[in-house]
Length: 342
Image 1 (cartoon, rainbow, N blue to C red):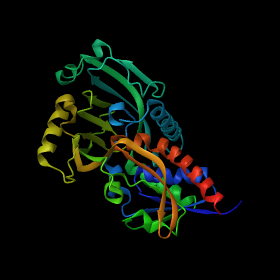
Image 2: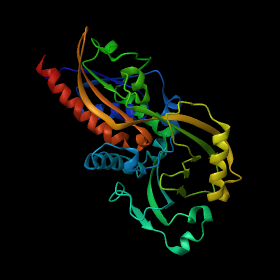
Image 3: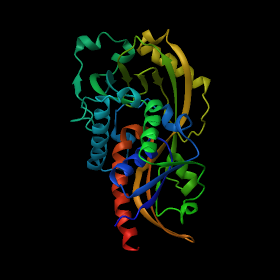
Image 4: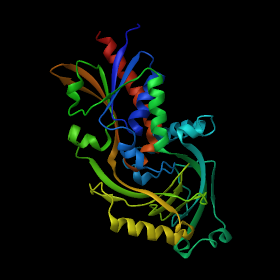
């Protein structure tokens, strides 16, 4: 059967864009429209450093095998891009760095993915300031970084090249889309709190600096929860950060900026003369568990199949392609249901 099915993806952050592109790749019969009131630098994704550094504590409630599958799919995608001619345009690079933590064990979610994850030797740790060395264990890790300021436009360009349609408007209710679309994929992140009344969504405020310091080539994470992080991107370095639960303030706060900068300069003194380009604050859409499921929604205009894909918290970039693959499979299931009724 060659019937085309209209699919709407709501939300244009890294999760929404990834999902829209993956649906196009996986389901040729899907005619995909991307709907959002915010794009690019207006999204939460834009402020993320984009380093692949998953931790179980930041994605609670998801079975480890499922989480590992999502991460594997994401890693394979980013690694392919990092080693392709599109690496610069997509903003994907191989990045090595140091981590200081109290945990003596390897990050189980990175095992088998990152190309290097070894304990630092005592002489390596001795070269770092005391603020780093007060943590018992040091790790040297080679991972991947996907810079959203480049990656989001890259995905949008790919989506349009694949025949995707873009509509800029706010969706106040998923019922608005019934009648126009048989399948709707909800990737609105924290917007789902208002869109759906989902009280499981919790905002976690993050604030960072973006600075110019081309002499810094390695990332640095200090503390088990990465209380201090310095992450070189292709052009700028992300310096953070904060993790303030149930804080909805999206304005940069000077008191936070002072603490972030002072702490970062203690662990990496070479940062002191970096040129500050901008500061950013935003809300990570945290949910326990991350919501990735299919729902049948009956409306006055007809029944639609809804796939929810939101609540990634601080792991939006790292999980985005993996959850997009999962969401595309759910769209396939929804197509079977839709076609069976035609």
